[in-house]
Image (cartoon, rainbow, N blue to C red; front, side, top):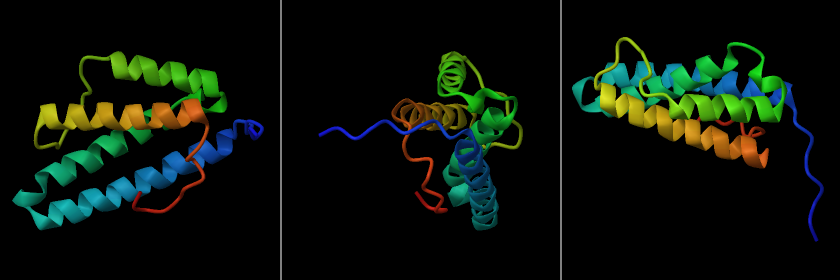
Length: 119
């Protein structure tokens, strides 16, 4: 049998984005302390922080369709301006990967209830 579709919970999505942003900031700090060999980890955490911060601006999270539209627009962009990163190409690759992850979650309307730091 199929289970009924869950209703979109904008507050849960915003809470998830805020938690992921907090985790990304902690991961950035940890990678920064580890130094040169953790540059990729730093860029990955910076990409996650950038995506969450960008999605939290505005009211796109209020409706599933508007968030999906915003994610498509962000994925289609050519560049993602950020300062303090180590490798622009690697950062942009991580941003696109994270945007696709959130887009899949948005389309399926699942995964936003997982609040653990490491996912």
